[in-house]
Image (cartoon, rainbow, N blue to C red):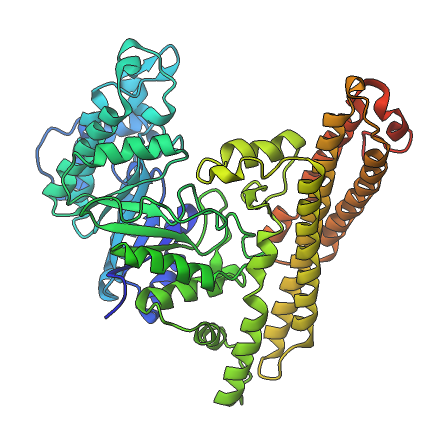
Length: 586
């Protein structure tokens, strides 16, 4: 018997509408005993239902979208010509996905963010916009939501249910990010708004005999409390989906304390096996131990299901299958079925499925090769943790390098604040001498370790194919460059901050040493920019390597820091200006 009843694979956006990709996912799921496919797209329903009620459909029941279309094709063409045929064509795609999943014994859920709606609704009901802002509290939204989900389940009774996030600014309308200031909006309590929306969704979903799961997808403890207090008033048949950490998928953050604190509801726990915040697999980060620990935590708190996200809605054209982080997906699947699954077996399974073992390789040699690879890849998270995190704080823009000093600390201290969940981290990013030394030591350790791992990979293993050795070596060559870039950028960012904080004439501090050290670091930054440029013109890796290692991004950072240095402390930066330009020529 599996350790989790629900073992789900989650696909986002572009891939959710790619039949070849979904078929590949279904084959993987069948081979690895995963039983639930989650297709994530914020506007999934808007792409696949009209809803007919707002274009002229008057009957209570229709046998298919085509009977609705019989009545409303003229109105659709008049008001939304590009949406006229889109929903019924996407219907055929989704029907096929549902059938392929049925044959494999897999249930399909749709994941979205509410409220969402097509633009034409605002034209039909102009009162929904007040002073240029969409009104979140208008009662129309509850009617619209019921109509939308009723039509969806009339058309797709095979779908297993809906997973939805409500407390996020990533939807088109939410009380969490409401900018309308009308009297009703000002008087609306978030808890009441969530309750109205959940009720409007639950009614048609429950009537169809399907499952509603509410995502506890929030960015603050306040929003956590608002959602939880709302859920306490709702039927226990409504499940809850929780990220494994309290704020997005940051592996340095603690376990989500909400897991196990949702009453008797079904709990589905979300994991990112691709790496939005830990290198995209371009900086490989194998998370077997982290997955096992957090899944054991979830299991102990009576979680019913686990979900593994293999890509990201904001980055089409890249997924777990493109990089070494595919191993994380294999690990998630193995551990969802049996938490005692060993790491060596997971590595061996990935090597076998990837056809990376030498054809005449014996079982003993296969086991030795898997152990060899594991001894190296098990250390990759230690590298990434000390690369794009600073003292456990998020110091990247979804694994990208920051583009300015302000951007770096906004990411770490505001948007992705660790101290929100661990108050003891309040001074984790302070620029005092002792803390700065710890931060620099952290980056030095990361670079030393990744270079050691790259050397070990380069030695190869007799049990692996030439293709496997080449893929591993190329992956680590890129990995080393990524770590070097973050090390240098972090040096420059913190040194610039220290210079600004200490260069005030009133303080009387001598900033000579800081300025000299910073000058050297800025020269190093110019050199890494040049290496990024050479990588772009001299190599042909998967295209997302160049998205993450973008010279223009680092040029923007260089220019920003140069400007800060020049402007700091009146004339304090004059010596620096003589040897460094605010423009860049590499």
